Image (tube, rainbow, N blue to C red; front, side, top):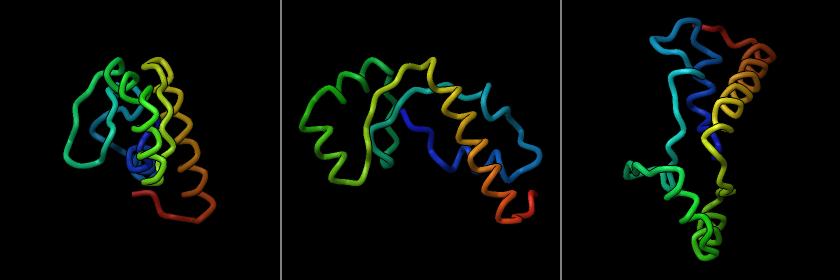
Amino acid sequence: MTVPASYTATAAIYRKLPYRPIDDFTMIGTTVEYPIVLATYVEVAAVLSEPAVVEQLRRLGNNPHPSSPSEFKPSMAAGILRWSKLVTEANIERI
């Protein structure tokens, strides 16, 4: 499951947050952006095993690939590192 850029970018830009960006999030899974969908890993994996669903998501510009909850934290950490590097290189002031 891909980590939304807004979570990792926020952690890269803000010096202090009222939460721990990596430890306080647990991957649940979403299949659409709106309306809010609450689904478990098992449900998301089952939906993403359907070729028609994968095809439709790809047509919408997504690259669906199910992953396990244990892969979530490393993905989140990698996103924060990627955005932190961009923030530094672009000389964006951290607030």
